[in-house]
Amino acid sequence: MSTGLIALLDDIAALAKVAAASLDDAAAQATKAGGKAAGIVIDDAAVTPRYVVGFASDRELPIISKIAMGSLKNKMLFLLPGALVLSWLAPWIITPLLMLGGAYLCLEGFHKVAELIKPHAPEAHDDAPDTTMTPQQFEQAKVDSAIRTDFILSAEIMAISLATVSSAPLWLQAIILAIVGIGMTVLVYGAVAIIVRADDWGAALARTRNGATQALGRAIVTGMPHFLMGLSLLGMVAMLWVGGGILIHGAHVLGWHAPEELQHAIADALAPAIPVLGGVIEWLVNAGLAALVGLVAGAACAELEKRAIAPALERFQAARAKQA
Image 1: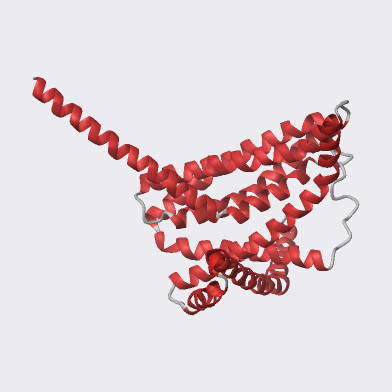
Image 2: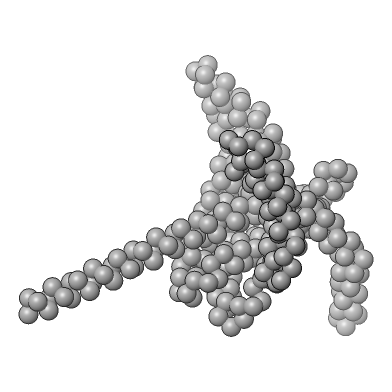
């Protein structure tokens, strides 16, 4: 009996080691997958604060909480199961879908660059409350709009994560996607909560009697607009390099190796210029070339959107209006 018990304990210990190794692997792969989605995360954090513009200070955190819960539902209830079904039934479609999402990122990045070069005057009604709505209805409309935008960004995060772990067993993919989904939601909306409340915290610090605390508070209030502008610029560049990188690597996976080989050849040639910073230079060159590809791809997608997609959508909407 004692020998059987010892054998059973050995089996349990062995299973525990396997489970621990699997969880460690899941955490490591989730970190890697999350890192590849950094551009989308930065852009999400940069975009979301505008959804609380115009609301009272005491409504900011509740609104962000609602958006965060909607984002978590997007990832856990819709995108994660959908990603697993695709991975199980049609794994071949993951790369084309990922490239389609990469093209969307390039398009969004290109629009941001174009807006930076030639800003459009904001329309007066963009963030103004609809006078036909109650304050509660207007708040819910803004939350719903934010959740719809989040769905697209979350889909990109989950697609990139799935592509990173597509060779793992299905159960491990599920764990990794869940870790990424929850982790990214906490990271993004925790950061957004800090950003939107920073002005109030800075103003509170500026009203204290301590000179150093007052200076810190004034610096926060003065610096937040510049911080948000820098975050928006970083999000723009990140979308281009992530989107361009997805297209380059996707082309390689589908059999067109020249773009990725050329990218690596240029990076390898320039990296030894400063041996101490070789790895940094290699990364910067790869990211810069990916961003350049992303900008060109974004310009092409913008032209396609203008000449084909938008007119087709208008015709579709007109046809639906006639039927109604």
